[in-house]
Picture 1 (cartoon, rainbow, N blue to C red):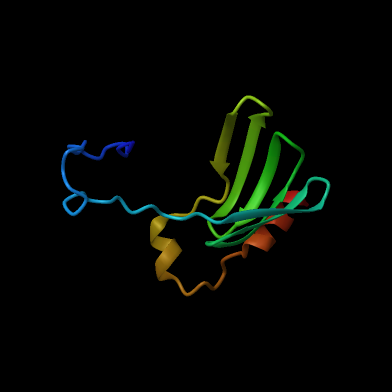
Picture 2 (spheres, rainbow, N blue to C red):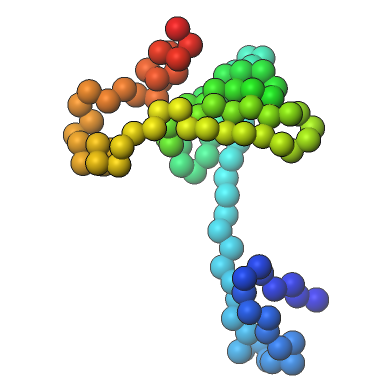
Length: 111
């Protein structure tokens, strides 16, 4: 039995295999390594990241910036907010001079 993807049109099962259109599936890679209690190294296809904090609350630094995360463990309820919001005009066009690195942002927030 085949299940249609969400948003994909339902196809007639009587059609031959040569006329069926397959939906491409994107692969995800994510690995979390605990360095010490409350300190985790996150590896993904987008790059390296670091998370600091107890279960249910953390501060994360990675390729997409600095995020704060708070949740209720075991419930699936959580809130995540980007902490280093930048304007779009300064983000891509500048040469990088004067911008803090993610590691520098984490040190500044923890200090």
